[in-house]
Structures are given as C-alpha cells and as structure tokens.
Length: 138
Image (cartoon, rainbow, N blue to C red):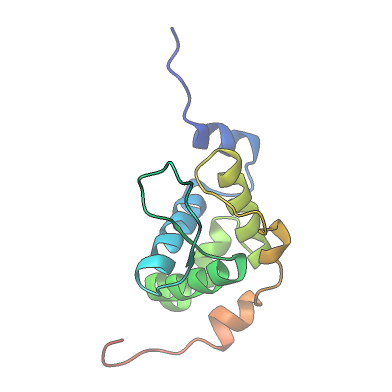
C-alpha cells in the first residue's frame, strides 16, 4: 500500500505558484494576528461543541497582520522574501488562504470572500517606502 500524500503536498503540485514557506508563513501570521495583535471576533460555536468559539480574522485584518509579521520577521527584506515565495500582492494572500481553506487547513465565515484580500496595500509602499527601523524595543 502506497503512503498517503499529505494534502499540502497535493496542493503544491496542483498550484505551484507559491512555495511551502508561503503557506507556512500565512498560517503563522494568522496565529500572530490572534496572539500578538489581538485581532479577531469570536465566531459563534455550535451548541453541541465543547470547545470555545474561534476568533475570526477578516481578510483585511489578516493582510495587515501579515504586513506587521513580515516586517517583524524580515525587516527591510520582507518584500524580497515574500516575492521569493511567489507572493507579490495582497491578492496572493487571498489565493493562499483560499487554497488552505480548500484542504481544510483554514476556515472561513459565511461573509468572507476571496476578494477581501485584494488591494489591501501596495507592497512597494508597505515594505519599502514606509519601512521604519524600530529602536529601543517594541
């Protein structure tokens, strides 16, 4: 019996636009949005579920969290790193998120749309022109 291929590997073969690191980074940025930026509103849980409701981050909020996370992680190299993974605009974040939704690695609300990610900001402006070096802590 052949070993089963993980869904993310199937996804990378089906849609080769983005590298594995891009998917991992978007997932980590979502965690960053919840943990560090305190973004998200609770989604109602089903009455029969024991787990607490999940906090939902909108496409626009996730784009902003990704911007901040990228700058924190990569500084002035953020745009270059994202570009090397196949990410050139906030619309690419939407493509990545919806690919992850398709393989059940992320969830969406009834009001979420792929277009929510489009044109959240310009990469050149967000990562190069507006870049500021932080001094003395956060």
